[in-house]
Amino acid sequence: MAGKTATGQSAPRLFLSVDMVGSTQFKARFTGKDSADWLDTFRTFFTNFPLMLAGQVGFEFLDDEGSTPAVDVWKVMGDEMIFVAQPSSPEEMTAILCALLRTMQLYEDRHYQTLPLRLKGTAWLADFDGQNIEIDIPELSSDDGGQHIDFIGPDIDLGFRLSKYSRPSSLVLSIELVDILLTAKNREMAALYHVGSEELKGVMFGRPYPIFWMHLADAEFVFFPWETEACALMAKAKTMTPTPESGLQQVIGDMRHYLKKMQGIEQPRMVLGQAKE
Image 1 (cartoon, rainbow, N blue to C red):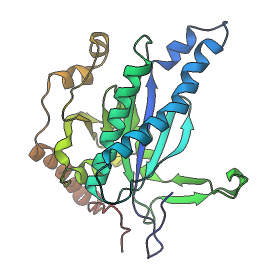
Image 2 (cartoon, rainbow, N blue to C red; image 1 turned 30 degrees about the horizontal axis):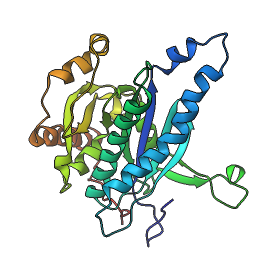
Image 3 (cartoon, helix red, strand yellow; image 1 turned 180 degrees about the horizontal axis):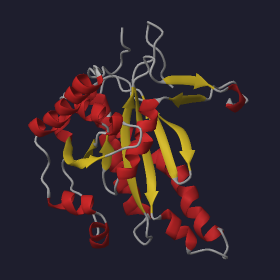
Image 4 (cartoon, one colour; image 1 turned 180 degrees about the vertical axis):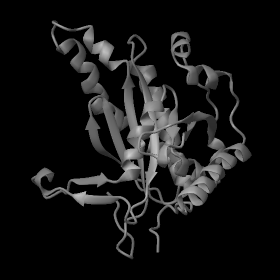
């Protein structure tokens, strides 16, 4: 994995979670039956999805004169895979997000056409200037000397809290990520929606956290009727147009104002590829 800056500090990392929707019910179908009936479905996901993602990331940067950014598997939790990357610019971050969305769509089209399974995603940033830490766990290192790096801190926890509000055919994004995405020169590749606010345990001192969803600008939300019937956020998003940039900036500004006024916390925009001085 990419590591530290010249100052010895680690630059912000991008975390990407991809999770199966409907996996618990799907596995329950095979209770008491041969586990091979469902194991192949999950084995294929954990084997093929990272390869497909690497291909889509490569495609996004095909005409780029620089190197293709690495998007590595950090860990697997149940039916969820979490990737980590270290984008060097807002444009690189946006391209990685679009590659992930395309991979999710392609994977569903190829593998889930006749299965009651879908994919949903979460994307967030963590700044390693002291609030979060990366640690090497020697006991989990590989025999060839490769390190096993883990990440711990409140920004890491935020992503797991936020993933509760991820839905199929889209990504749910953290505030910090949206703030940077709005500065990207290729920002028009993404369609962004502020679909509401929800309280996240241990986040923002109990103040409801904005829920931002993203899909590709040349796509739309693909929700099935039974999904929108069961989820008010999905039903709402289905009727929305992308939130204007001014509206997104207002939401972000209001949250930063709250943190400064009520909690005495300054939260400047993260700078990708750099650690704080």
